[in-house]
Image (cartoon, rainbow, N blue to C red; front, side, top):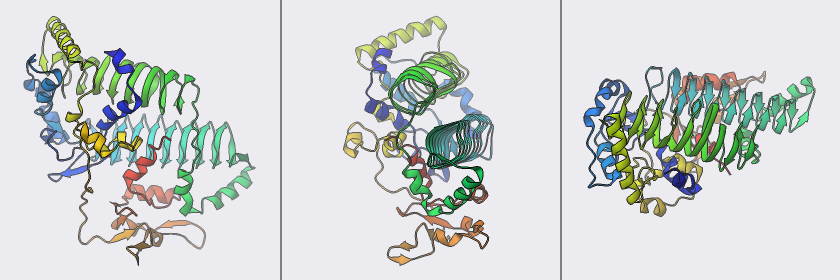
Length: 498
């Protein structure tokens, strides 16, 4: 199986796996969920109700029917078993609208995969390992704090509009920085301080120039979009592609941490070594060994074609199981072992039955394939696959039975809500804009009118969003301008890998 998996092409890897990671929150039946209203998903439950019934999910177990293919057997279970609206694990605090949070999550909002003792995380993706105050950023990990509109930040703080930062602090508009502090508009520096455009200044000169540079609030996003496209690999050996940290013997792709011997990985790794990983997206754990075609997986050895197999090992074709081992084709169960299609077997029966199933799959030429496209419950153009590579055409994805969203996402805006634009003009008319809510006072102190929190903001594309209190306080504290992009477009900036 693994020989077939490890040789998959990059585009197929994206199409097969990254298309299972959606970024759009939908409102269904007055509840928030990541699942659009399509006919590929089962009844939805709140997290609280879901945990009450989850221990009984082996009642959905079924014997394997060898007159059907494995995926037909699997789909029968997949479409019948209940599902949780947002994949969160209890306990969490003040974090209703997130997906895939793990323990210690506090004050997180509209973010995907905040993980492990993180708090105050808004509009971000993949924030891990005791990070706090992270806004509109992608892949922030290992004791980071005060991060805004940045990508791949490790063990750093006070990082704004920057990419690929390691062990640094107080950076603005920087890339490829290691062990640096108080730098602006710099690229590819190590152990440097008080630099602007890679030129070092005295502390006094630097602070004077910094104050002037940071007055130009209207230019912040332009600076971020024009950051250097060259990405370094840090403390890594025999590595192809970009921004991999403490990795070795790896091929294809980027934004990985503590990995050796792998191919086709994005946003993978952990604070300890992981090895022999192929075609995984957002994956890693302490000492993960052998993971193939996996998403969000965490823990043990030999995990094939599975999503979110948290704290599990020796699992194959499983979807969101926890603390399980030696399971095949199982969905949403926890604390189980020797299961197939949510049905328990003795140890001997399980190995015998699994071998028979693998033999059938091999004859059907599907052994090693990821979950079929006809099961994917997300709109392809709402997923990471499309954010990373938007060259996938509508005809291409629909031909293979993926879903694709053509209509605009409906947003409930109260009739009484006052609209504010990101620009002064809308439909050839001058209207109230964000410029009317932020300014420098007579002492050159940056001010943002708190009334903006009562408004609905519409960007140039017509997308609408709001400023919440936690975000407002952060912007004011760090002298940041109001965001001119919808939260999804801010996340998209973190996936511009070319």
